[in-house]
Length: 234
Length: 234
DNA sequence: CAGTGGTCTAGACCACGGG
DNA sequence: CCGTGGTCTAGACCACTGG
Image 1 (cartoon, protein in one colour):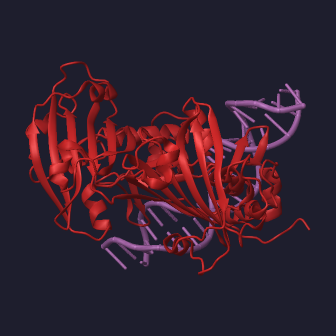
Image 2: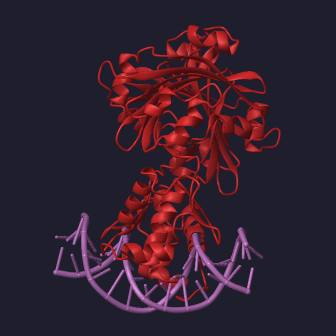
Image 3: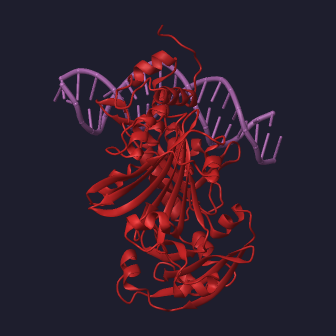
């Protein structure tokens, strides 16, 4: 029985392939039929099969190589996706009313470690912003940020009392790529007074470096209030 | 001048569109030309433009809707990707020699919160595994896990002294989906003795629930040693 | 209702890389 | 070498949804 159902979309092919993988009909490490064969069996064009299998390969369930064909991954390295939104939107999505308060705005020099992460020369012209984000009036996350003024000269005159640097940069910076580093640390002397918790309380810390297409833009350290959970689906 | 270069692949179209977005030639919030127009301008088929713009939409830089057309996102919600690998592979990728030690294997009942996260009925038959993963002989992460024996009956007789439950499940479980929750907590009395740090030391904690296509599979709490950093690129 | 993106098709050529 | 996936094309129909 070679012929099967017809009018299959790539989603149907994707689901059928996923079913065969999970049902072990296609065992881990083994080859699966070629695109041409599958297209014939399932009654659709090869491009449709290609689209479906490409999605599964992107998800880490299949490994595809020219000439070698397609095989089921032995150890499926699934990928979790984390959407990087505005802090205010993140707070709203948790069902709380977002708030914001600027704590300080000065020319405190960027520490060497952060400066190296951005690839800036010593003595680079930077602006420091310290702020607090609130959820229903309670401290949510403490922000300590340096902005590279060579890349964002307008930041020198921007009003970070009304709009957070987070949002201002997202609206004005030609964002290209960056790095995220989460760690667990003590809240610390700098953030604790604003968070309403003892300095030694464990806190989730996010350090982010952001780069535009041509220049480094900003480095920020976010210290979250106790109880923060970073949730992802897989 | 309508005509342009020819023989453009979808990657070239993708890069050109990205350039126009970052250069503000296509301003945030504004509409961009339709697929047909772009295909004509760039000298390629509409399907090629579609592939390129779909990638940009998946990345959060464009918003596409039928009839309404395609517009540049006001606030680009970029997505970070986290690949979920074996703990041993994670340790190796950090340049260290992985180690593993089983601490306990018993029938300690699954606590209610974890049981609810998996959607299991009270009194569900579970297996508890406690283990320690090492990097170059030093504690790396402490693991406390419950396995749903109704979904994975073979786990009852598996040898978790040699192969970690992590790897065993990845090889034997028809993994479908799950949730991840990172938080910062004190290391705690249960994990601290194995980690070689005081119980109140801040630790990154990962709680994961994993489901197969039909049944919940496992719930695990990973307590990382101090200094752990979760790194992601954008 | 009409315009836009979403998708499918049949065919073609090409690039990679296993044997 | 030559088979397999990667991609492009021209055309077509469809689904959704804004006006």
